Each structure stands twice: as C-alpha cells, then as structure tokens.
Image (cartoon, rainbow, N blue to C red):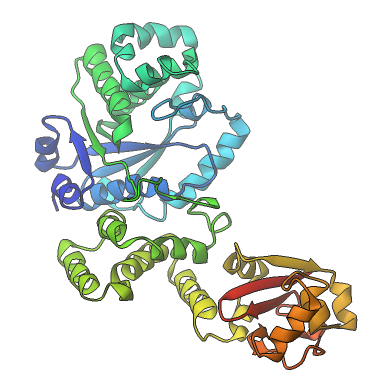
Length: 427
C-alpha cells in the first residue's frame, strides 16, 4: 500500500513537502501527528487525523501520536480568532488519559517494528527552563520568519491582537518535531492544512540547529457541502466518548449526512477500498432514498468507535423511534442509554411517589405535564386513538398509570401521533 496514493484517491491530501513521497516509498518511516488535549475526549473533528495515522501504519510506517501536555498549557493560535483558556496540569492529566484510551482503539501498539507509540511533550518540556529554551531554540528562528506565518499575521492584524505566549507556540511545536527527530528518528510531521506553518517551522529548526532533514504532509480540512462546520450539531460537538455523545446519537450524526457529503466522508472516514466505495455509489445513485452510502458510513464508523454491540443498539433505537421495535427493547438499556435515545425530545419530570397512587391519562398528559395544552385537547385526541403510552394506545381518558407502568421503574414514553415523542421521568 502506497500511503500518499491512498490519501490522494481518498481526497485527503492537501500539501506535501518535496521529497516526502520518495522517502516514504523507500521503506519504513516514523512520523507523528499532534492531538490537542483541551478535553478528556476527542471528537469527530479529530477523526481525519486518526484516519491519516491508520493509513500511515497500514502502509508499513511507524506512527507516533503526540498528546500536547505542554502545548495544551499554551494554546495553538492557528485558525483561532481569540486566545483560549489555559489548562491546569491536573485537568491536562485527566484529558491525556482519556485521549490515550481512545487512540488505542484505532492504532496497533503491538505490531513489532511499526508499532504505534504515544508521546507527551510535557515529558521533555517540564525541565526545560525559559532561558535554556530561548538560548537553544529561539536563536535559530528569526522574528521575521515567525511573523510571516498566516496564523501570526491574521491575529496581529485582528481586533484582539496576540499574546507573547501564543506567538511562541510555533517554536514550541517546532521543538517537538526536533525532539522526536533527534530522539525517535521521526522525520515526518503530519496534520491538518492549518498546521502547515507550524510544521515547517519544525523542519526549519531541524535544518538550522543540526543541519538535518525532515518532511511535512498535510491533509484537507473537512468541510460540509453547505458551508457549515463539520462535526458540530445544534447540541455541540459529536464526541468519541459515549458518555458525552451516546452511540445512538453518534450513529444518527453519520446517518443524517447529506448525499453530497456522504460521497466525501465515506472516502475519508472508512477503510473501504476504492472498488467497494464505487459500488456503493452506484447503488446510491440508483436509489438515493435507500441512503446506502450513509448506512455504510454510519455502520463502519460506529463499529470502530463504539463496537458491534453498541452499533446494534443504535439500529434498534432507530427502529424503536421510527419503526416497529416493541417497548420491551428499552428494558435492555441503562437509564442513561434510554435518556440518550430521547435526547432532544421534550421531557417532563414527575415525583415517583405520585405513581404509587396512580395518575389518570388526562391528568398525566395535561396536568402533571404539558404534552397537551389542555385536558380537553388531551381527551379529544385520546378518544380519536391518536395517543400512546409505552407503544400502547390509550384506551380512555381515565386509564390509570402507576409504578408498574414505568419502564425500568423510571420512564413513560408518550407518543402524540406517530412521530411526536415525549419522555416522562419519575424521580
């Protein structure tokens, strides 16, 4: 497998330093990508770089995943309009541990010579004094060189300006590359296209400090066809941690991808070969309503991030909401998983003690909750057979619901019509 060609046909390659492809074709190369530890989980925006590392390792090369324990205390100005908050060491350690657990799902850390390795730049910066840094690193890169970078120019010319802390970020990242080049024989740095300036500062430092040679490769920044930001929903980031984004919501994120984006994403985010993808595209073009690409995309990524069992739950959850899966399915889920399925659905809380006595349907739906605006409206729709609780149509407005009616002893699932769901929670 040719790594650069793999990125090319997938539409991932953005820029590559001369000589890089020739080097990669000669034999095993060690290369790295840095990950930002601003949270204890990566999100789908990080997946493009994770996929780059997967392809890199599959091509026989050795990947280093650098987590920025030191740079996380500074903050990368690339693509940012304002300086971000700095993190404490305690918070960083929690974040680093979470990120490491996630990366271990994707990369092989026990494959012999090209085993993946995790490194933390805090390990080589924690004893590096400011005076030693400006003497051993700062003197090799001129201010003119640093000022020429777009990430610096854009901020200096903007409204907020740029702190000295952020200005020095490219030197810190450049030293990361130098350290890994010197100590780990790491001759390639990869990243998103917004990282090109920081990466080549590292190659320049290696050249000026030790007359060494190093290389750079960047990938396309992921954009949605409608111009909105990839990886964001109205509810915020889509995280890889199931506690932050449920596997069901994660699956739905990919399933709801537009046809145009699905053709791009299936190349970037799956491991399907070109022949398989083209066959899926033929199926999609012949019957777009079947959403063949979206289903293949959503399955592949959900299984690799969360596992087969969670994917199956996500499918059953979709069938429950949009198909004919019975209410008993919810008994297989934890309370958090039930709430995850109904994220974004209106919910109401009623004291659990009230269910010990029992509440009639009208009072439940228009008194204790606001499923209906009035009891009259509730009675009318119940009489018309248009309301269900726990997938069973309500017989009469006087039907009583008690503690035995609750799913997991906690939930009632109400439907007004076929598609309007409400979750009632007993606490």
